Image (cartoon, rainbow, N blue to C red; front, side, top):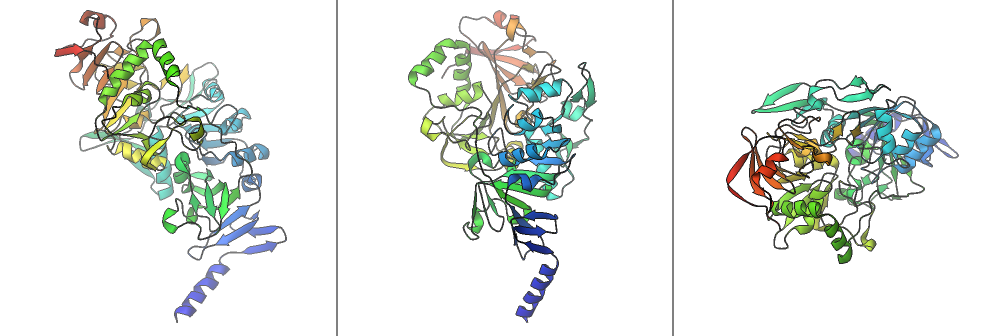
Length: 525
């Protein structure tokens, strides 16, 4: 009886799929596309089609499609599939991706050919063409906090239409008005809409809608012939949640292996989420920021040439505690990790999907699939873990990170933070910063120079630039002073650099502050 039931089910499954065999391939009726081969699973009525070239795998993507494009910086990007889109010439695309590569690689190539109409991203970064097109009104850009972007994609793949997050409350993300498209004269043509807000347990949360795509373009390391995927190191990033959030998921891999080559528990994305597969023919795997360990001589040159920066770094390093989980921003915060005492253990988390960051690599250790959130080459310590971007920001928003250290353009008296854009002039994007300062259980420390160029105040009564977070900063460290921040009482000066007076600090600070009765000289590790 069991045999007859199984035979009936298999026959019914096979009838549900129409497959035409041809001399040079198989046409799968689900997509009406010719592919090199199809593999079927009796657990569902979908097939995984293997294509002979990346161009063929993307050839039927029509103008106006929404694409989810995996990768972080240049790490784990589907470079062969992107090159395929260059050949097909598809236009008016909406690309959902953390960033847009660089000027001459990754999605930057599609920006250059004007094939993208709108970007939904968290970070513009060093892509000058991306920034130029946005500010000149040639490109629509919906800037979204990195963790919110990852969660919107994850929710889309999970069938959840919307959710509430603390990220972005009190900023342009929640209030609306963030420029999506500029006119040529610099005025705003399209701006973001105001988000719904709800209060839960005394905290405010912003409603965000899920993101789904018509197609997902994914880069994995390996797949088996059933369509199961495995990623390598930090190349998992946005690729993993994007696999699940598109109508058609197209994956390029470096290697195709036989079924059974992966242990079932080692599979990162099961075949149910995969529709098309192609083996990439060429991988450049460019590295945005190739950083290697410097010699002692090189380090001394840097130290001697930048006393101000060094002073902030050595004070910031005193914030680390044994057993702490910390996320360090680009620049001074990350450099502070070089001064962690060997007597303590600090677990460094990187929002692109690493826990257990180690030092910069030697030349022989450089790996294009092992980078930090600053796109710099790194290593990891024994016991480290890799995970996807949505998992990473679950750690961050969920309060599992003890310390978040980041830079700033401005900080207000009551702890408001601004560090992601100067409207109409400079737009780098918020990246993961809005998420990193959104958890009530995480200590937020800002490291920055006390004043901007020309002596302009950076510590103010009220920020004049768009906010990254509202009343989120707990401590400010500059080359001149250290302040504690109380969300109701304001600033208290707790440390001052030797040779300076309280009046000196008042003269270069754009707001009033209290002075701690136990004021002491600024500490250095």
